[in-house]
Image (cartoon, rainbow, N blue to C red):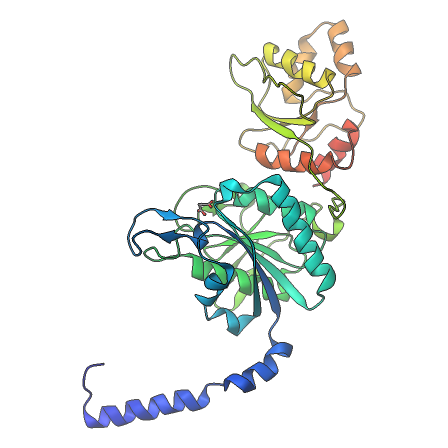
Amino acid sequence: MPPLPALMRRRWLLGAALVVLSAPRADAQSATDTTTRPAVLILATGGTIAGVQDAPGTLGGYRAGTLTAEQIVASVPELSRHARVEAEQFANVASTMITPAQWLALAKRINRAFDERPDLAGIVVTHGTDRLEETAFFLYLAVTHDKPVIVVGAQRPATGISPDGPINLLAAVRTAAAPQSVGKGVTVVMDDRIISAREVRKLYQRTGGFSGGDMGLLGVVSSNGPTYFFAPVRRFGARSEFDVRRVDSLPRVELAFSYPGGTGPRFDTMPAGLVVATTGFAPSEAAAFRRLREQGVQVVTAFPSGDNVSALPRAAAPDTTPANATAAARPDSARAAERALPRQVVSQHLTPQKARILLMLALTRTRDPNELQRIFAEY
Ligand code: SIN
């Protein structure tokens, strides 16, 4: 500090003394904390939010998933003003390494924490942004509690210039601690925006980085904490039928694209299910996907953009969905053969990668295509 004139120095010392005297004493604070501040569990999985550069403070590269859960929490002392934070290391990897087995383990860990800890207000999952939307959607379907689960990441590593991880983590903890977050489903909080895990999409590598697309934000985190404007109405959380407590592994579901000149995917061993990103099949593709259905593969179509909002076919209705539109042009015998096959299921307003996650969970419950269509209409 530069030298101060005598009068200013006295005022500064007096001001500093007042700040010290008015600050709550650590022991007095901890005596009230356990009753006044909500408990929030942070489950750290790695990602850029835990990333460290070889040359800190530069624009240089970094290793995702390096800092520990404790180090991330310790870097944001402000967290303790809003919650009693507990940190647990679930994994420490770049999110491209996250597997469906880990989705399952994470959902089980969260369900168990809420089952065993009625005092927990909410849970925050720190995660790399590359696969954040997929983990968040899996948890949205497989966490069968209505307490808040917030998934959060960062676009810049913890040692970078202007890291966004600390402020994102603070917003996530405040959102997890807030009673108004109950019943909103798993959400993603980035750049003070609260987005439903059902709709969230990674867009770009800039601050915020995620969007809810046409479906927008559920709310924002302001200086007063989270404020909600909307809530999701489809099934999730306590109303979800996907209780994974006794599920040991997820069925194999593949993803494929349909495109001009396409002839459909080939598999050495058949998956249980297949999601096809398509706006409609050419005859060669329709034949390929029909063959897969004949071999027992459950086929679900999703718009490549995820934005299909056309009405879903009723459970027993003939299959006249866009992807099957060529069936209408086929002769009667071909149409009869099509009707004899298990129906092709249509997803509504889900990206193909999220339709895949819903199909994986749905196939733990049923292989009846009518039931699968019901599930895609309800979630
Ligand atoms: C990752 O997804 O683990 C790395 C990228 C990021 O977190 O933004």
